[in-house]
Length: 236
Figure 1 (tube, rainbow, N blue to C red):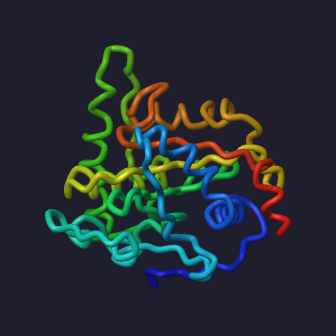
Figure 2: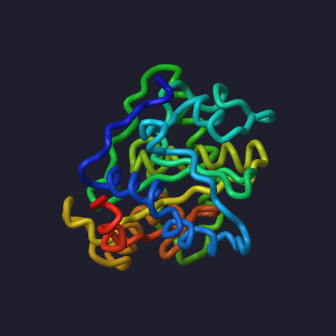
């Protein structure tokens, strides 16, 4: 089921993202657009929308939701079914896709390894290796000595999101953006209270994946939204 309807969430990143996209999208846009150099740009959020039963999208449906076609490298040749389920999808000025993954507490970063088997696992491994070579080429300086871990088993949720950005942006020349949204002060799940806590947690992830210390991957935007700014909206 590539379109997955969701309940109105009661806590965590899903709750705060539903509120943010539907009631306070400007708070999210203010975090994203300056990092894109998007003066005068606007973002249309396509999920998770209240009038769409907060549906989240994956596989071919996420491409259709974004109104894009992969003419150079089709999704089915890159990734098997049951690929990433996107927390949010958006379009900048109607033409630049945004893929978004949201987190509210640090434990969400430590995702399990891929459970795929057989030909599906082989396809995922090959695509992750393509993406790894692309994202790690900036990390070839003498200061980056840590060998990259296997992207199939280390921070797999993070790496499979990067792989899909690679598919859109590099393999198909679609100007896509990947946003990792980190909520601050999500007391309902005992999340980090500062941006610095989040950066302290994500930096080891980048080092272990071979991307490098104190770097974000190419074409990836880190956004931070304080839950305190959403509490009034959440009471409605």
